[in-house]
Image (tube, rainbow, N blue to C red; front, side, top):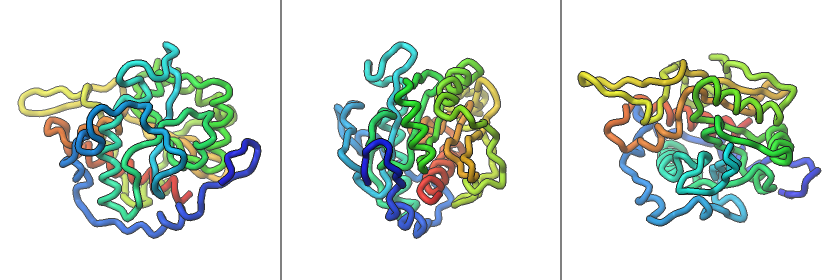
Length: 279
C-alpha cells in the first residue's frame, strides 16, 4: 500500500478477510492471560523507542499513538503519558487475542506519531491518557485522513471534566464537523463477537479502594462509552471516558485487581479490534 500523501488508500483486504474468518475459542473467562508477565513477553531493559517496525509484523499489529504532552515531552522518563500502561497491557491483550481468536497477532505494539505515513498500515490505533495530549496541525490533518479512510482510534484512561476538555480540544481539530455521542446499545461494535450489555466501570488499579473484605472503585465520574461516526454510520473513534481499559489488561495477573473488570476489558478490547478490521 502506497504511503504517499494525497493518494486514496484503503487498508489491506487480507486483514478484513482474515478477521471475517475469526473463530472464537469459547471461554467463559477471557482474562486467561493472567499467567503472563511483561518480562515473560519482552524480556528486561525494553524502552519505548524499541517499537519501530518498517511494516506490520502480523495480520493484526496493534499501534500505540505517541504524542506531545502538555509539558512538551514525547519520550522523557520511563513512561511518558502516551505509554502509561506499556508494555504490560500489550503483553496481556496480545496473548489474549492469540488464545481467544485465530488472528495472527504481533507480540507488541508499534509506537507511532500521527504524522508518520506508516500509520495507514495499522488499522487499529490505541491512545491513552488523552487528557494530557496535544496534537500539532500536521498531526491532526493526517489523523483526520487516517480515520476517514477507514482507520479506527480507541482513546482510553482519562477522567474528569478538565481532562475531557483537553481531549476534545484536539479531537475537534481532527474532526471539526463531527459530534461525540453515546454509543447506542444496538451498535454493531457491542455485539460483533461478545454481547456487551454490561456497563460495569473499568477502573485503573490506582482507583481501587479496599475495605471490609470488599473492593470498590472511586472514579471522577460515571463511565461513558462514547464515539464519533462517519457519514455512513461507521464508528471511527471509540472513547472510554472515566475508565481505564489498559490498566485492566496490565493488571490481568494481579490478584488484587477484580477479575470481572479484567474480563470485561478483554471483551471490549477484542470487540474493538474485530470491528476495526471488518468495518
